[in-house]
View 1 (cartoon, rainbow, N blue to C red):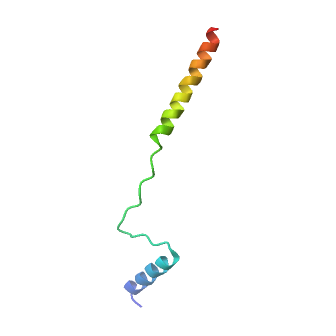
View 2 (cartoon, rainbow, N blue to C red):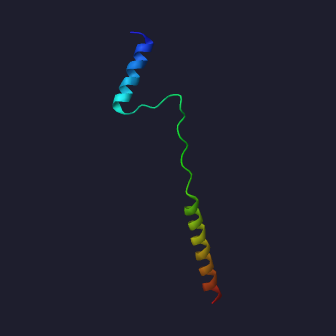
View 3 (tube, one colour):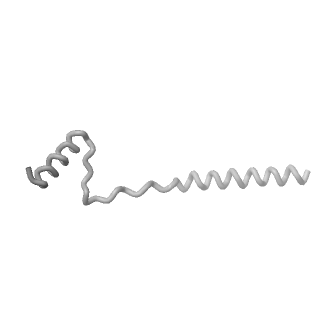
Length: 58
């Protein structure tokens, strides 16, 4: 059995187990955090700071 035969068998086994990934394709980059979520967090933090400042002034 040649190395090429072994590589084909390994590839066939991966395909049959559902784990095949083309070696020439690079893995997809991780998704970036949602812009809207970061905006909501910043808005909530600003509102909290504003409420604390207003509570200190009264």
